[in-house]
Image (cartoon, rainbow over all chains, first blue to last red; front, side, top):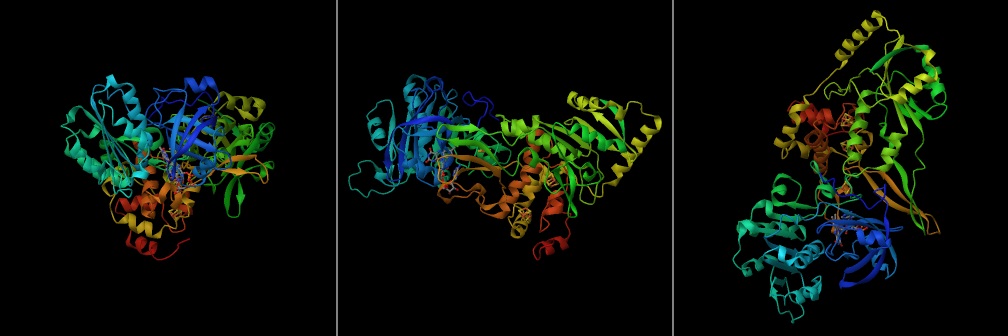
Length: 286
Length: 352
Ligand SMILES: Cc1cc2nc3c(=O)[nH]c(=O)nc-3n(C[C@H](O)[C@H](O)[C@H](O)COP(=O)(O)OP(=O)(O)OC[C@H]3O[C@@H](n4cnc5c(N)ncnc54)[C@H](O)[C@@H]3O)c2cc1C
Ligand code: SF4
Ligand code: SF4
Ligand code: FES
């Protein structure tokens, strides 16, 4: 159980904190990027979180929903989210404009154990919207580049137009200290210069790895996990060094509403980041 | 703990005095069943009840209540439904139920709605006598040593009263002359006899210690499919269980205006939409999977975290489920003790 995450400064952990949308634009046809700032300046600047944690975002009248924080704590002040249109809350968010107010509370969940990953190699495997939480880890590790050894990113999307943070990742390809492989299931543009296929095909492009000293992080649609994990286990990466972030329905984020429960764990407190070893022991996890 | 004596006839005057400054909730008759209600006519308070229809949880977390008032200025905490209360007539199993909810609503983050209501409610427990559904002795929740301000054991002509907190003592001091500090040997013997007889009065029992392992060993057993086929997914078992805590949240806007409320209402994991996520993915689409969650939580998961089941043996699920799926039948099915007749009946007809 994770007791160290405290809500902002309120006594009421359910109370949304006003936050302002600083910037918002479309990343793909149905995913929008949001940059927000907590209105209270002191809180905005003292707000700290861990890559892989999430926040509850609310729109008056529409409700509240959990979203991964896509920005990195190494760049404080602003928080970033990428949000797919799915229903009531997300539709309301899509209608909001720059300078509008939303409710925000968090950070919640365990996040990624970045301390344990120090002086290790990192492989990040992303499918689709899985980029939302893992971009935070990627940017964090690049901002603290000397703390980590090799960093590799394997990123897959259905089509070029559906690749979230496409420009950002193309720019990262130029970096010498990052191994970045992008892939799409199919190229409907005829202009795609990167790989074509499913994300698992990218494993053959990885240079020789040092499995015992490697942490792998996976986030993507449910079906992706099975195939990717198989590859990672084949590479002999220890099961407790394969991390994945999982989605469950969440209504409170603070271990009260019961929606995210699996066996004796609460995904919102004990997750959403789990190791493959955890997953083997918890039947319903994936 | 200090124990004093109260004559039966002195109960009503005592309740009357203490209810001046707080709402007194107590069990009263409703049809042929009982419910917790605010009472002002103390002759209506029922002393010989078994379980109430809904558990006392409804007093601390009403089926729906407002968490925040929402206006253009933002969210304002709404604790307006929380009042000073005295809850009289709550049985040991239900007090244990509250202690279980305490654990959940205190884990990692404090739930101000529940805890504020808890802080404002004095608990005046009352002893009980089991009927054919009760099995609190199997869960060791038929007696209670903590979690009350006063506890009344009903010994026919008088009560023995345990004073569990200084607030409880304050209530006594409102009219100490109603009570008697001096217990005779005969009083004590009466209590011993009551205790022995009551222990013998439990009509059925179940071995909880083996159930966590059986949940594990029989996780893929076809018994779950059979149960799932019959479950109506009505959520009644959840509504009546004193240890179920799940809820949902929604925003409610007032007509015409920007103002509204954030509403919190009871939810149930046996309902289909409970585990659905964006994109229509549902991790527990099958009723059998949702029943597994319910029973895994009660009989295994809570034990691995807190060392005891999150079932207090109140028998409400037994009295309530329209198709006879409950801790008794599921427990016995896991133990392989359920008779063929149950399975036949289960997959054929509504039993209640
Ligand atoms: C830890 C975590 C991190 C997430 N991160 C992101 C992210 O970075 N970007 C993103 O776009 N989405 C993310 N999601 C999913 C996001 O929470 C849902 O898309 C959102 O709740 C849908 O809300 P809605 O009101 O728009 O949809 P609704 O109108 O509520 O319903 C639309 C669909 O969403 C499902 N749903 C409702 N509530 C939830 C919920 N709390 N969690 C999951 N599904 C739900 C419904 O069952 C329905 O299928 C994350 C979910 C979790 C649990
Ligand atoms: S087990 Fe019984 S009470 Fe519970 S949801 Fe199913 S039919 Fe309803
Ligand atoms: S599972 Fe049934 S018997 Fe046990 S506490 Fe809940 S309602 Fe009572
Ligand atoms: S989201 Fe409510 S308990 Fe985890």
